[in-house]
Image (cartoon, rainbow, N blue to C red; front, side):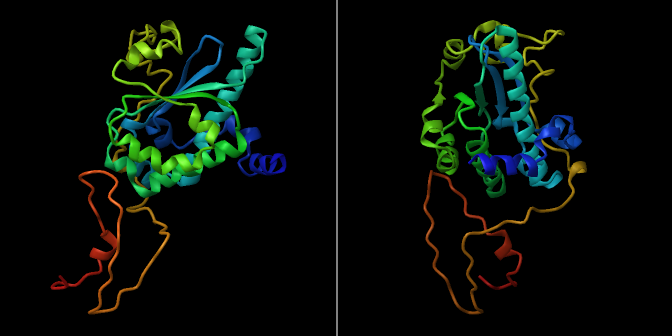
Length: 263
């Protein structure tokens, strides 16, 4: 495991990653940030999933650049842990992650976006084991159960046990983990930016829809687990598991090759 990790650090050039600057579109629209500490001094990392535009990001930057930006966040968190250790005179080695899911929708279940998240969690488990103290989910819609099922197999059992899903009274419950003075007002605390902004925008990026002017390509190449060829005049029966009411089956790559009168 150590040899694989050293190879990973070499491949990702982690020794110099803090000096690396992500592309502008990633800096502006990748919704995350480090803000505050819990009672033991552990840094708190926010990931604002609900306002993320995964398709826009993957059309504007490479998957490797987005993964590298995530690994850069991990290294920033490790550096913050080291600074906290020096400040408090004790070892600080873990972090708290808060996932804000307000606005989570079907667009967030887009296959390339889910695959990116799966790859990140796999790398996290292999190279940053036990860095996570708690993964706290707030503002989770019903769709969260579907999204979590798609990524939980890439988490260890130990990591899955650290996932905490807060209910309707999440702001009050969150203060049991983090002191109000270390929480942005947006998340039920008292912290603001110097100008009084309750979202602490100087520390947390809330993402948003990526302008098309950043797009580098028109579509992301999809990798499928199974493919089938269907001859002219023949048919193919495909079974699909319906995970929740209102699912929509889309076959864009099939439709664009169909001729008029094919139905």
